[in-house]
Length: 99
Image (cartoon, rainbow, N blue to C red; front, side):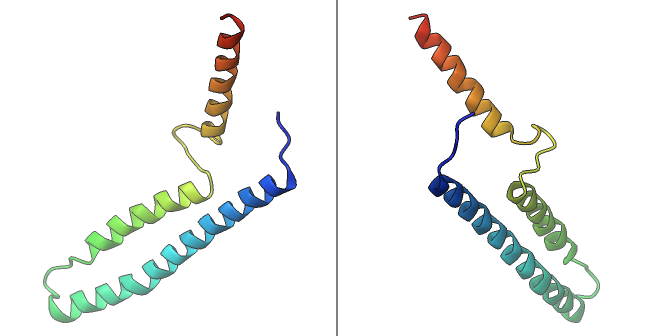
């Protein structure tokens, strides 16, 4: 496996921190906006609870954002993308040897 330079390690860590900050900003927005929407709904149209639509819609988006931020992918496994890139690079290297 290749070694990363200090600069590459720093850039990868910075990118991850930016993803985490983005997720927490999204989460904070959700926690502020959803109660406001519930209040508006119950205040003006209490007979129809439409607030469930943004709760579930935005909640699903927030869930996928969290999964992306923390590299959790139950369908393809952890670090699937990096493993696949490595596999394709090795395959390409073997192909070049036989040409």
